Image (cartoon, rainbow, N blue to C red; front, top):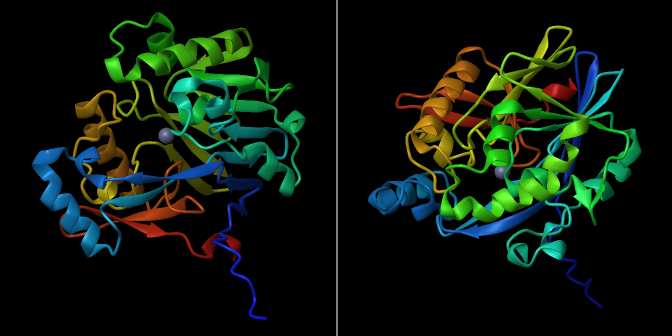
Length: 301
Ligand SMILES: [Zn+2]
């Protein structure tokens, strides 16, 4: 008997040391999205996006879109950045078939963490794939955690003014999921410290108040850029292209250029929520722009 085909399998969890901290990236889930174009650059740039995909040996019509929260154990506190999709697709009709069920809690258990162990939950921004795992059936998933929300982001969704049509349901989700947690949340702005060694960085644009986070221990630094770049080829090599899911498109372009320049110049290690597994790498300058350099084994030396 020939061995049975077992189907695709890929690692979803990665943990390494960053100075005195332990960092784990955990893929909550993923979707296969159709069409890098027109999502990136609109119809006007379709030919360029297709050429870029071909040059980088990826399929322009189907692309892998992972959701990758990050855990940082500082030795004093366990800090979770973003919560994945949680049970959004089970609890909200509009989310059915759009977002897969989140596996974050199951996968945390595989590497030794219970939801009760999380001391701080940091939300980089209010989009569904980042807030979905905060609560289940109206109950907080991380019962002992305090929360850290960006003040600008919170005000935007809480007030609900100038929310574009495509984000109306996102606003409903935010009010249901995030706003009830505000009494246990610190509202922060760029430059503020989350816990010693973790500082918020202005990444406004993809969402009105998106925050990135600089994580530093014993001279080792890592920038969690969250959704600054939503694709490792297109958004990094052509940061100037508008992306349909960016809320403030011009600001998102300016932010991508500023942060790409910073991480390339400073040779910063980067974690990105939608970067290829394990969501870690570097950015190098090229003749015309930038290029994502996928992490291999360096952090384990
Ligand atoms: Zn996202």
